[in-house]
Image (cartoon, rainbow, N blue to C red; front, side):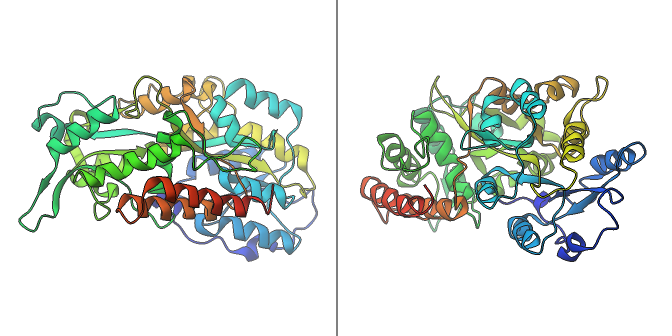
Length: 417
């Protein structure tokens, strides 16, 4: 996953290990990946919390180092009280005994007030481990200026329609290189730009990625194989190739992409005054039964915290609306252009703009299925990305490639399930 908000100065492990005075005197610590500037509204809440509570302070850990820093810090016998956890890190953190199970009041707060897919994002082996915070959802994002120029007034609703529109948009130069791409996949070092749309499309085909108990992969299923074929077809039709990067969408030369809501600020900057008129967000183009993928962060408490009850009280405080105003967490996320899946916070926030509203609706309508929480998730998604790339560029056929991938993934799963 690539985005500027995840970048920042690496949190110094030494600060995690600094010796406190006594357990009751030191402030509760909240470790997150956001920069001090991004987290400013939340930090203000933490500062205010110290006036009539145990006190609280913010600690930043860079996104790329977060999981390793957490595990290393615990080996040294010290850790923050509260974590903001990317959902696919959770399985490894649970397996290492990092997270405490929430009290019943926190579990009830989450199950009653958050969308089902987001609850799943914070759940491992049937146990909820915290309160969901930031949520990202994938939808179709279209450059309506290019669609209108090609004779289309609305975004596509089926894959066949999208291929037709994308073909009409695509242009090539004298060297037969794509100048204007009808569609684009996002390029990222983690492979998420291919894998996350693959998840959304596979869910829309009625498939899944893993069995419910995570002991088996479902990557050789008809749904997963068909999805790989759909993605490859966009290259076979000459609509796109992997030299085109969806992250260049703000420059205006890409017709459509499947992208998450967090990229709004970059698109808005690129389109400027034309943003509201020329950028449209719509359903994954797979017909009436479309589904999509979401990933989430959640706020959990360290199992070794010597003030677990106070830490859970702070988690609840940061994520509960304040007298009709949004929660501290929702205020921060709204300032970043990010989403919360809390129904109470959604009601307390200003009405979503035209770009954001379809993402919010996908959550509210339970169209969004959580990114699978499995052990070694990053390694497994790397394998999926490499196989998809081979199929997309024509180096492998979808059926045999997905069958081989399924076996490779199950070899890794067998070590844990």
